[in-house]
Image (cartoon, rainbow, N blue to C red; front, side, top):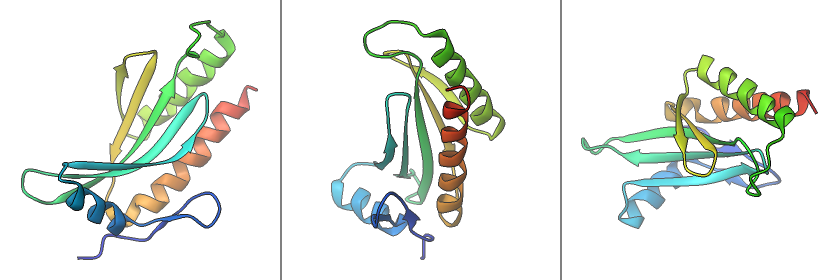
Length: 133
């Protein structure tokens, strides 16, 4: 079964959904994830889970950091994060609070749409975070 097109990330590095499947099956774990973008405000990754049925479920996860590790609060930066969370919610992402002032935003995506959704959320995330800079 083909699982979609590779995701083109920075440089010549390609992430192929089939590679994720191979990694999750070889690892003995039920989930594998690759981080594609990371900075002080957010992290974007793509991954795959093995469901109870044995099928593969692909997802995109964006972690949004509400404040820096130092704990200081920058209201302008927080406003950017809230704007991004609203955009991701409207795109159908499930939002969940995590420890350390982080919000996990996750969406299940068909393998054939993984590259497209990644490109959209990468562009959206950069636009929203940089818009108020």
